[in-house]
Image (cartoon, one colour):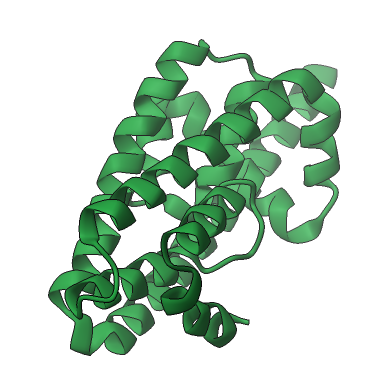
Length: 200
């Protein structure tokens, strides 16, 4: 799937980037970071215009974040419970909730930059927990700008080494997801211990 999407970047350009980034913000398994990097490489080669690529990625990010936030705000607890029933998302969701409870709006920013695999879940949780919309939007937009600049610039500046950079990022994403799963497990165990302690 990744190779197919990458092959479509020169054909559909900024529209593909915008749609991919928006959908990845909704927790769909789309390699948006690789697509933005590849698009940056195409911009370096002159096939795309860099500032248009940057705006497309940012528009997709902001739109995806807002959709996730408003879906969860409207759906609330049932939506989070549905996500929590799937084994993979349940662990990441626990890690995202732990991060959000400990760091608040800083968690929103971090989940759009260095902890980007947690981003969609933090977005859903922010809506479900009814974080202030304007404050969520400001923190999410700041993180989105940072993310879009970082990945598009990596592709633009290192166009000939994108495959190596992508491998490095994929390995770090695996590490982040493992850490998120560990945080989620810790949160789940702590919650169970507290409930048992209160019952006793």
